[in-house]
Length: 496
Image 1 (cartoon, rainbow, N blue to C red):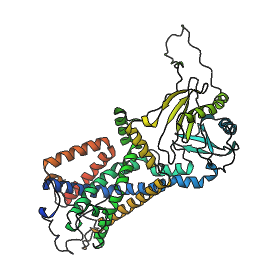
Image 2: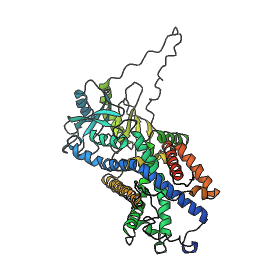
Image 3: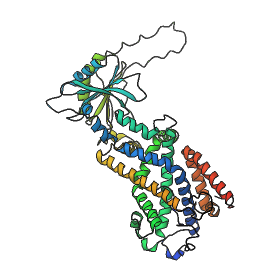
Image 4: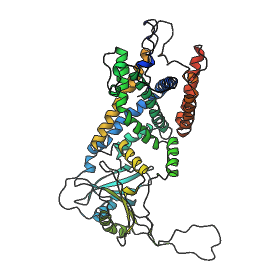
């Protein structure tokens, strides 16, 4: 849930004074009333200000995210000629398919090959192209039944996104503004979980104070008996509850890709040994590469190893692929071609729809022996959860079902944001004062009136979150400054 969920409905001139809060004995709430009310007031104020100022960034992320959610399916339709062929007969040897692709790109270095994972899929032969950007490679798509190339394209990232999906990905990530544009998506991802959890506190309190709605089921069901603004509030809250689990997951996984919070998350994962493991491709007994120390060379040196012959590597691929499949790599995989002597082929399962594991093996191309093995079952739990979360965020974990779920959640989030602004607009004073009127903020002074048992942990948590998620900390300062300025201009004093 984002943006403000507030109690006042219309200006004081149009309505009688608001009814007092129900007596404590009439509500099912437990615990310290002071701490409970203070937490509610703080959550309300945080939800209001963060929602007002950050919601535009979240709205852009939601709109672009809705398009990003279905981009794998759009790609399969738009690029069907590159991705699919008519099944028929037995596939040609993988080495023959690679040789046909190499003939079309004689000036590029062969990097990897992704054998056709399905009967109607093409084989991807990947090349390193110095004219491309980071994480980009040129792919030649080959008909596995005829070993004839059907076209080529630039692919991006571990999922091998084609240009259209890459364009949508970058629109969602940085609005095609480069590194400065990534601040928008990091701000949205960093604040989304904060606003959502604050809104959860507000909505639970609102529902529990109504004796006629004392069941948890009412958190997910809007009260249609309310007036116009009341219905907006109820739909804002109930739809927010439905999308809450998914948007929390999207917020967490989105921060792993961010610049500043992402760096802190990476540090924590490294310190706790939650990083994604990798296989070793160095062959047993291979000489370590020499490093020039800059000293005296009168003692001589070891001759450099002979360069790799690409044709020899291509001839070894069939044996390598058969060995990998016999050793558990049975999903669609990518085979990395060694670029230097003393290295093994790395065969790793690709990030594809419906693939939940990333098993990998290293194979000696000369002998066909497995030199290293990394089963997905051996990954640390947090590394597995991170991988699954990223797959889900990209719409690849459950295929089309995953994409439709993300599309529904992003549309729901958009409606929550729009209703939040509508609620704020309807809170504005309607008496003619000769100046523009905006929606009123919730009552001030919540932190000052709270008990130390609540205020101290809240301040400590704010400092911790502000340090670990820097864009939250930096943007929180303007919120506080605006709040103080509004309080001073209205004669309320600099209270929080």
